[in-house]
Image 1 (cartoon, each protein chain N blue to C red):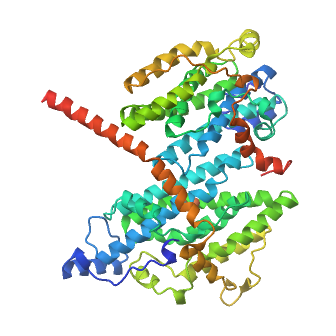
Image 2 (cartoon, chains in turn red, yellow):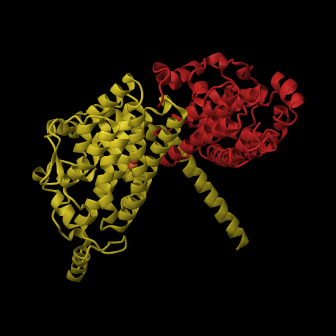
Image 3 (cartoon, rainbow over the protein chains, first blue to last red):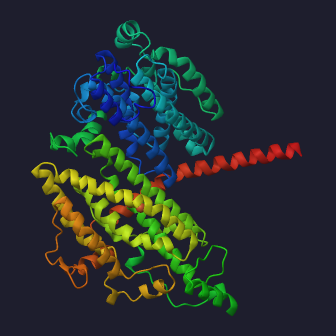
Length: 277
Length: 335
Ligand SMILES: [Fe+2]
Ligand SMILES: [Fe+2]
């Protein structure tokens, strides 16, 4: 690991790539696996959100959802560039030339947009999760992960605010909006559980071998429930309980719409392999 | 751009705005001195109407203009290009918002303007009624369409109506980024494989003519522009702007290694400008008459978003109302 990578200096993927090349250092394999998960989470959600630009309920929302999508693709590019350094791959190699089983995003990130309520509920869960995650990852012993998280946490804080505001508006707005957001909660919430599962990578490799590199997902559940519960209470919405999706995104098991999402995202790059753009 | 497609400002009458001779004289004086009119100033009805039409058409163009490029956000071939494209389309939404705000200062609210757009009653720039079948179209739109928009819009930064001119200053800054980004997309393609070069050339072949038509019909066929020029809400004639644009493009096309699809382009030493061939105005009028590639699709998409989002806007309004009532009630208790 190059010591030159410091917080604030490793924010853009170009910077990360440059500095890694400079120092000749690469992400350790297990750290790369971890960075890949976070990059995939952000990229796939960005791909979903990009669809709303020019389709949102009002122009202000075209802009707001577009902003979130832009922030997320920025985070994704940094994580993927860093991850790719372990395997001699670029961010684009990873984004465009991996097949479905090689993707490591949790399933909630890939869920279909649905109506505006589904998009907001998905964003609500995800941004509160990411905030808890990144606000701890800034203390990672891996300086690149810490630097990426330091930038991301500020942006995700805004995403939290945006989605919480909408949860209140939809929950307390009209009969119709209340009905829709409650349905969306029922549909989306089963996928929340997966976000907080520890697994082999976290247990055996990152936490034990590389002390303090990653954040243990199970530790995030309590603060998440607390904050999310507060917003839902204020919005007068019920916290869904019971149904839990099997998950498996971290192991490359993805939901029905994921293949189509990839097909769209990758089609042009794969039509012209080896081309630069 | 929208203005060039022929808004008819009508006769310079005082209309319902009334206004005595002194007010009219003051307005004329401001025009003659190239000064600025602000929202609270008196202005003739026809001037107000012409402005609302021009600014709202321009706003609609920004909003509809999000679609042809939005079409490629999901498929952009690199993450960097995807991010740039998302930011660009989002900029256009912002331009639409600035312009709707400027038009609102003239007393027409955004809902009314939006209603006109989604019912197909309002005009927007015809250029956005073309399809974007290839990635290279993202380059052509930036280079040619944003490029033409800049030539049209830079003079509008000095438009006589203050809020419009100020909105244009912000917009023009961003449009010049867009043009450079479009140029860079094409440059990357031209430096790429044979297939990529072909993609770039084919795209420019399709967009060049329509982009030149963004300046509107030849001056001889554009009698309405005269009034707009007298009111300083348009500064140069359609043909003057078109000439400027081509003079700017030719050297850039050389850098790109792209051939502009007009064999008549030749340097004219005497005029110190490029001569150019005739454009296919039948095509222009076809699109203007609603028979372009995407007229129906563009409006339908906006209407779907608007109508599909009604329950969301209604929820936001209801929530705001409840918040305000709660605040009132709290205040009443204190008092
Ligand atoms: Fe624009
Ligand atoms: Fe633009």
